[in-house]
Length: 231
Image 1: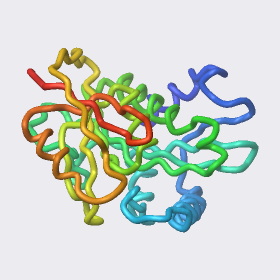
Image 2 (image 1 turned 30 degrees about the vertical axis):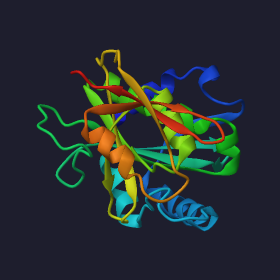
Image 3 (image 1 turned 135 degrees about the horizontal axis):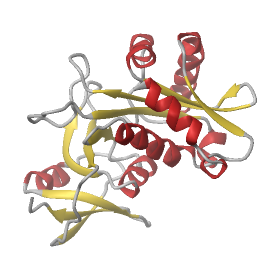
């Protein structure tokens, strides 16, 4: 997959990156910088559960067996974004029977400069493109229901929420999937307000009834838009 990733990075147009910035794959020599970025992000986060903190062991796994994208400006790394094919150590987020292991998007950690430049949405699309060109049928990821920016960017990239699950840190995450051959959903549609914190049991119940989260309605009280999954 690294060969495909390098090819995709070589094919990026100037319009795909903010002026003056670059994008490359991480190597083992970057692990200390990735740990420093993770620790910085943890200090900046004013509440638990918004993202899963990456340990040295996990970061090493991603660099060795997956891909870690590093946006940079001059020699300064602006953040990182992980992806890997599902395997024995990293199972698919959504349970099921798979003929081919799906691609998995893991954490994206960015400094304020990179977030302001729109790198989060770009890195979602770039990682999806890498998996598509590598012949994958689908990509999965998780996101906190309280992380509106990440959730909105993933839904805008045509991911769909299929479930909710408490992760290893004890906090809930939406389970999202994008199928590269997915068809449009025709409804019926429903909208459900997203809480700032607390229980998301009503969303879990709606997902269990066969609805799929397809869009984020932003406003004073953000809401997740659902469509009936008739497939």
